[in-house]
Length: 255
Image (spheres, rainbow, N blue to C red):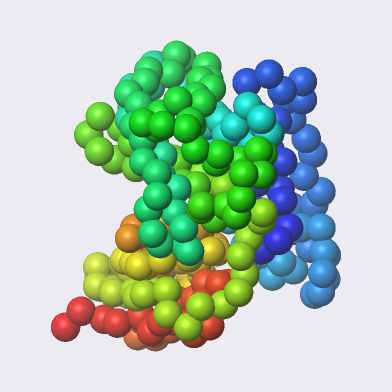
């Protein structure tokens, strides 16, 4: 997970407006044998956490947050499509991983194969030291979440910024829950919800393989993932966990 987060943040820096670097080599695609390795896939071809996290960082529509010290936080929106990208940018700051302390909106249109740089403090009603550069006192927040949605309300991209890094003190109750329904042919669809900020949410199951894994989930948010059956067909079962959760949550099947 740490390797994946570092890769995602590094590529985000290189993709933003003003970067002098436009790419990098990923070494390797797949591990050569069991154990720690350079690959995005393990020796059996199963995606590792870094594969999941890097894949989101390389999407054609991408969102990231940079800490520019005294200049504050900035959101970088990248659109690699050939058409303009109209959307709604929302930024929220949370204390203790769940109490909203700042909120801002901005409507924008990102040009084709272009990018936009947006000052976060400019979206708020008043000044807030979101980067904690002025050191007025203890930070009023621990995470900032930027969300980009289309005009139809569909989630297009999301970015997270932690003040002082990840708070990995495990919580006994994040409000994490997972509800599944079967779509046929053994395929399941699981909706994961959380009350508080959940870091690197992932599935623990031997029966199915998720289409998405190791994703961050903002307070009060939900994310739906498709789970495909393994070669040996078994009923969907398993749990959902997060690296900052002391306990995992069972996947509950709708009756």
